[in-house]
Image 1 (cartoon, one colour):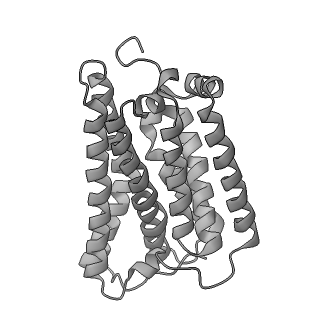
Image 2 (image 1 turned 180 degrees about the vertical axis):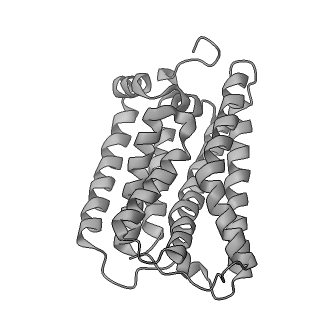
Length: 250
């Protein structure tokens, strides 16, 4: 069960700020992400720092949103980080959530081993959406920046799309069932990846639903945070030699 949130206050500053942040996550983030990615792809091939440019802006954007969430917590003294899921589980996790977590760990191990093999990595690189391939770091400096982005995504995106968004939804509609939260968490997360195209939206929606289920089943945001960061960090194992070159002909 997701921790309940109250104390925002009807039409108070905290409630207004919370609703604006949620509106941005659902409506604004897909647009901003798409604009950033188009500018990034347009720079590839002639700007050697294009990826670092994108990584830095993603870091500023995601940590900036996390700071805004912190502002809501300050505006509503009765709302703490515990209500946003940043706590240790105070009960035994749901059995289904445990099974799902084990399956996710197995998937991470197997897929990481696969991307380390040149033939499998080349096959995956050929099948992945171009928007994803373009994000994969090529140089040591890019890899360091991407590592920060992956860790940031694991923390901030879970805080935003699982902890904060769903807590606000529960404050508005406390009777919404867990299945509804799982669907909402998945769809909102998928729309945030609109720049990846339809296939990317579907894939990330499923991933978002699985991460939401882990949150619902364990009662803590720490589990999906770790899983999310691990999924993104796998990219660092993709061999650079199997990736297409940058530029218009990539």
